[in-house]
Image 1 (tube, rainbow, N blue to C red):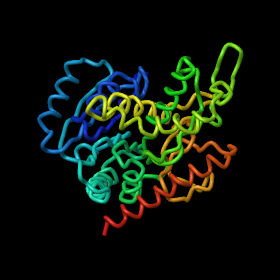
Image 2: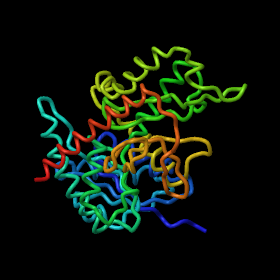
Image 3: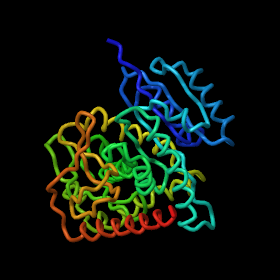
Image 4: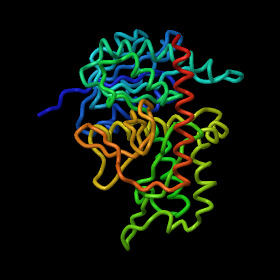
Length: 332
């Protein structure tokens, strides 16, 4: 039986991340090699011509799974009937801008897009917010799309998760696929906490802990953490543009695992609505270790948290509380 096409919305689709992401979706990287898709691409009026160019390229690539492409600057048309929404569009922080300026611009963008999703998206639409400040943008979206279940609104910390896996695999000179169960706690910002306390490496002689194999606690508690936290800035410095290919790839990983499930014994990091687990205040979108099954995520429970981790987890939670109140002050 041929599957029905899934409608995937990508906002900011003419931008760097969008341009890297849409061919991945069309090729089946996000939803699997046998899942037809209809791409809905949204961007702002000044990018309309570029967006149309992306549509032309998608048609020219002749992707077998791509059943249709809608390229529009109309948010209602873009959101109509979508099953998955990847919110890449946002207002970037520019030189000399205060955090509050960026926040108020993004609050108005996410308020408008949330209302359109609320009215026009398919039932049980899954939402992934990529644009920064991702956790808080997701919170605003949740606020203005009350009929979308809170469990369906997430933000991207998989990029940080993948960066942490990459750093460990480089350090140990092993395949990245042999490392699992790192955790990103908290905010997708420089306060996030990449945690390897529970991470393992699969080798010919069985599973070993990352901490044991690295055998350098000082590196794990300092340089490893700051490298992952600052990786985005390092890429901007090198490329003169922000991470696009890796962000697009992480967005595909996030949705694929959410929809199709995480491999047994493996967890991933997702920014999700806190239920109070691990003492994190409810009502924040916070990155936790999760497993996914049948299209639902659940937070991995019962992990032992040492003092070092506790302090880092609380610091990033405090930043999210501040961001939340800043965002809500922009609503008035």
